Structures are given as structure tokens and as C-alpha cells.
Image (tube, rainbow over all chains, first blue to last red; front, side):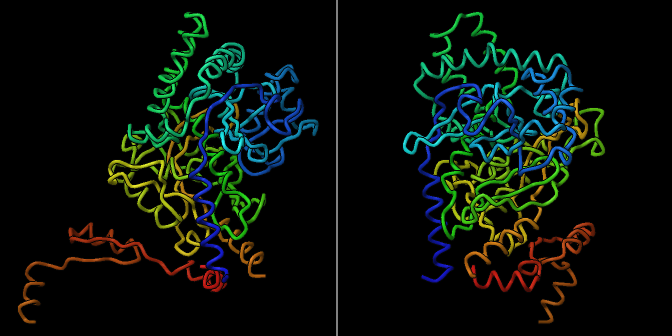
Length: 417
Length: 57
């Protein structure tokens, strides 16, 4: 078989494997109990691997803060000292079957959603979403942030855990599929997904928890409706993308993630190697009092959404998203249309009403990205460049071309010899 | 032919702009009906990458 045919066959196999995955929310547990390779001195972060010295301000701040939460440091200052001491191991979420939005910080005693594919038993993990504004995942810190994290561990997570187990599993793929018909793109607009999730969970909450606690949990999720479901959408997408990993000759991207310093991609046929470029700045809408000068470069594992054809690739489903990330409604349609040029297939699960229910563009082929000089479009939140502040806006960016060119060169070396 | 040239002078051109976006913007600013087609040389004209793509795509 010639190499072009081998690549086409491998890419089709990858798309079929991705389509077969059915991510089901089966549990919530502490990260140390369920995430492979997690221990008391490990903290996971978003994006490709990075040393402490090179980490962005919000990532350092989130790590210092989570060390206080873990009881390993007495103050935020102690947290910085401990993180810099070399005693703590830092690893990308992606290397541990996990994903995390923005700084993506995942620590041993944070609760995580557990999603599982019933056929393969593969799993993916993600922390529970704290809401917007001054929150840990954007590098925000303070007594209020710590108090919220503890409430999430002690009340929110155990309450939801009982309800999830009582439900015998919640089908997240069906929720996202439906939410795209209700105005979400499932990256920066998750409002419909959150409401659908709540409607699935509520009967089980009422069966398993005291009504005052149910009210408290319901109120928290409702108050953060536009973002809560992201932390379910992301591990759902991770589980789907991971099904396409390690297929010989496959030229599809299986991960794209940013750590606030670098952005990196992984390619199915090239194993665990990361191909990186400096992270880009995000062109967006800022909260009052902030501007581009305050922004951290692009950050987070949430671009796993675009890897499987939702988020920036499904913007045509979500004209309302432009009020949050900028642009006009017709831009949302044209951005999705551009992505068909660099993808191998169209999704059977995620369809777009305004495009006559055409499936979303799915499976980014690095060959087409390099040929057309058209890179994946991303919509994303914007963190303040300094630790302690949190989210300051949201907007749009495109992945840089250079890392795709590097990946293609390595792909050529491996398969052409 | 003369009739067509007359029409062009009378009605003005309708422009299809391929490639450089600045020509599209300039035409639009002057009120000329124009559509833009995004085009650039494959792989930004990089010979090494074109050679690779020729074998892989």
C-alpha cells in the first residue's frame, strides 16, 4: 500500500474509533483515588510540559494556592516557595487521562468527574467548575477562593456523587449533542448543557440528599450555568480524542493544549511527542477596567473541544457566543465553515441546525493545516497575566502554524524514512 | 464587445478579489461591489514542506 493510502485508511479508522466512544459520567472521586500516577506531591497543569520557572503568572498562582488547599503550605507565599523547591512534581493533565480548563491545576485532594466509555472502559477526568471571575483555575486567590474550593470538596462533590451513582450514569455526549441545537458551542457557551445536565441529575439529587443541600447545590450550578458543564464537556472530548491515539500513519491531531507560555499539539501517529509554539494572545472582549495589556497568553486544556469538532469548530451553532467572545453572528458561521477545509470528516453526533444539520468539522489533519496555512480556530477565556486576579475577558485566537509544520516534518521523517 | 465595454463604463465593475485582502478592503471602501476569495500559495510557498506534502497528501 502506498503511504498516501495508508494515511487515508488510518485517518478513517481514527474517525470511526472516535465516533464509537460514548462518554458516560459514572462517578466523582478525589483525584488521588482515581487519576493514574497521581500522588500526594503531584500537581497536574494544562498544556504541554513546562518547568516551574517558565510557568505563566496565573499558573504559578494557582499552583501556590492549591498547595495551601492541600495543606502542604501555610500561606500563598509558602506555596510559592514549596513549588519552587523541586519537592512537587508537575505534569500535564494530558499525560494522566485528565484535562483542566485555564491553568488546569489538578491536585490530589480535589474532586474530579469520572467519565467512562462502557465498551472500552477507558476513563477521563476533570475537576468540578468553580464559576467565573476570581477563581483558582484563572490564578485567582484569596480566602473566598479557598472557602469555595473546600465547599466544593465537602458539599458539592459528595452530594453530586451520590446522585450520579444513583442515576447509574449520565450520557454526556447526548447532552452536548442536544445543547448544540440549543445555542451552545460547548466551550465558552455551556448554558444549555448545564441545564440539560441539571434536569438529568435533579431527580437523583432529590432521592439522595436533604432538600436544603439540594437547594444549595442547585443554586451554585444555576449561578454558574454558562460554564459549569464545560468541566463535563472537556473530559467527554478527551475520552473521544484519546480513542484516536497511537494509530500508525494517522495524521490527525489528538490533543491541543496551552499552558500560558506555550501551546502544543499531539498527533495520533507520533505517540506522546508534543510539538509546541509560543502561546498566542487572545483577541477578545474584556471585563470593565481591563485591556489586552493585562492579559496572559492563551491558556488551558479546553481546546480539547476543538480537537473533536465542538467549541470554535461549532460556532455556527451558537450565534449568541459572539456577545461574549466578540464579532458578529455571521462570523460564527464563517468560522465553522473554514474549519471543514482542514478536517478529515464530519461528526455524526454533533450537528448544526443553521447548516441544514450538517455535522461539525471533525479530525484536524496536520497535512491540510500546513498546505492551506489554515490553523484551528479557538474561542477561549482570558486570564490576567498576574496571579491572584482571575478571569478578565474572553475572545478568539488561532493556533500558530509553526507547531503543525514541525509535526509534519517529524511525521515525514517517521513514515517516509 | 463595444456594448459590453459601454456597460462596464456605465455600471462599473463587479470585482472578485483573490489573495491579497487589502485590495478587497480598498475596493469595498470605494463602494465597489466585491467578493473576496482567500488564497495563498500552498504551504506558504515553502519548498521543503511542499516537497513533503507532495509525498504525503
